[in-house]
Image 1: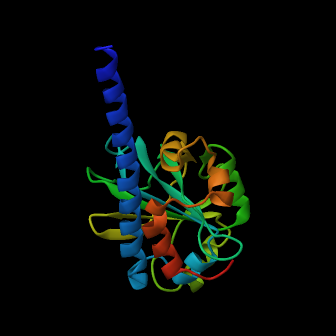
Image 2 (image 1 turned 120 degrees about the vertical axis):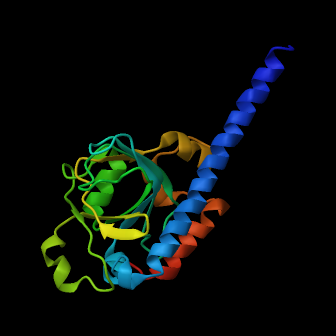
Length: 222
């Protein structure tokens, strides 16, 4: 019994630490989106945000090796609901792929817009490879998409990065996105698929800050 109690306490503390990590990442994700969306002249064009089916945000994405792939990050996806507003967020993992430029040693915030239901359905079905299952392009920066995005309007996913204060479109070809089942279980208290989360789950109170940012900047019904 004396040996069992410390083991139970350790497991409990590890579970609490994991939950705290998920909640901290939710808060960080809300912060980076708030900062980026608050400066449309230097950020994501408003018309693209208003057309997007889903938003994926990954705060502090890391690169394992200089000059090559090895990228890794955890973030969240939320999709626009039929009646307006944004869905409960599902935890996602992003791994691998080429970023198209040197990330250096700093963390990089990544934001992706999923531009149609076809890409949304494929992304939520299984592990999704950018540039394979869905076309991806570096997103434009500025208040209006207009002419500068004419060549990119067929892309199913547009992506941007922010590192050391620089915000720019970035191609994430070859990167894979998949649901983070462990984090979703910690956040929702049960095993639940990403598709079920964005389609029908009730958003926990801890997600209100993140959803509030998106509802404030793009409240229009799809």
